[in-house]
Length: 160
View 1 (spheres, rainbow, N blue to C red):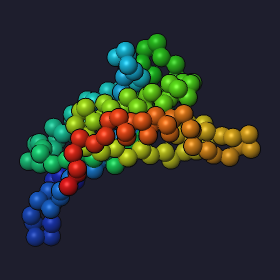
View 2 (spheres, rainbow, N blue to C red):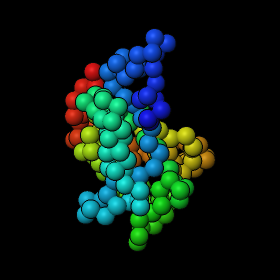
View 3 (cartoon, helix red, strand yellow):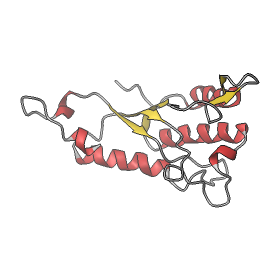
View 4 (spheres, one colour):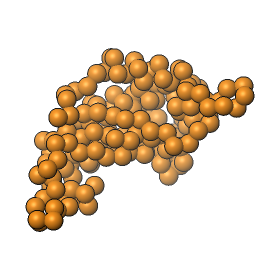
C-alpha cells in the first residue's frame, strides 16, 4: 500500500492529491463470532487499522478506505483457524454465513467505508457450492447473510 500511496504523477505531484478514496485488497483475516471468538488467527480489524495508519502516514488518512476485494483465503498462510475452531472448509454453511457477516461488520467497525467480496475459485467454498450435477451455485445460506449485512449494517458514508 505504501508503494501506491508514494506514487507521483509525471509532473512529480503526489498521486494522492488526485484520489477521492483508496481501494485495497484483503485476502486474509476474518472477524469474530457473536461471542467474540475469532474465526482466524489473523485479525481483520488489525489489517484495516494498519491500512489506515499507512494512509495517515502519507497524509490521506481522512479519505475513505474501500476494501475492493475481500476474499476468504483458506490456506493456512492466509487464514489459520483460531484455536479450537474447525478448518475453514469444514464450517457449516450457517457458520460460513456468520463468518462473512461478522467479517463485513468488522471491516465496517474498523473504518472501511465499503466492501466488495471476491471469490476466485469455484466449488465448495464460502460463496459457492456444488449442486447434484457438480455445477457451481451461489451458496444461498451465505448469500442471504451477505444481503442481511447490507440491510442491517448499511454503509458508514458515501465514498465520494
